[in-house]
Length: 315
Image 1: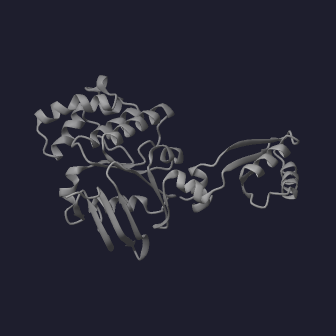
Image 2: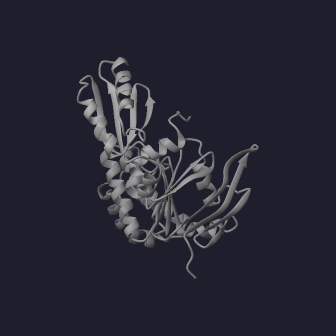
Image 3: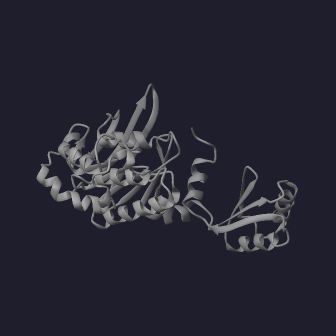
């Protein structure tokens, strides 16, 4: 019988009387990369713990790899791989020893791990580090090893909690390529990240949560088209004063056809969210104001995220 790799229905969880997940429902289809996005404290980590059976829900139903969670979490875990937010590799072991020890948790024999070792090291680009201890690895190498370790049991679904946090651009791009390879091989991915470009690049579908509730869901393109204007112009005054910006805002508001333009201010930067005609008008005005610096770009998922969750810092 075919079943969705992960199905969540009307999930709720409270801690000390405070709701951290509220009536959340979503489904991952086979081969999906599903992004779970939200600001700090939005409930993402709690959702992942609930789905893995690490904590019990107060209400709702979870089915993971065909098993009811949390009742049959141990059986479901045979088909699951997890990349935690922080690397928890054993520093006393080498690269290959970390993989072998983890394989024992899944009942894999030494012969089975020997057969898988070369492909895991090749996948993580760590062939030359087989006998290297963990403390001698770079941050990017540790992250790739953590991803390889999650594949020891050849799982059908992977939970990835901020897999590229703290990595340099080269390491991030390598991780992205490896995740794309997993998708092309039929793996299903549940991804949390604070990098909106990462989510836009990798995810088939995205759910944005805040306060434990779903506030938007769809493909990256659908979310951008639904929630944000087509173009963004960011403007700031190179002289560090506000007079030129204020004059520009007055001039922009006096233009006909600007009724649909939306403006926000963050610090000393103005953000104009506009469609094509208004963008052309603003760009023409900017040519007359040499002290103003600006960036003109297409709207992206980060713009959607900020509009839906706000610009306020979350700790």
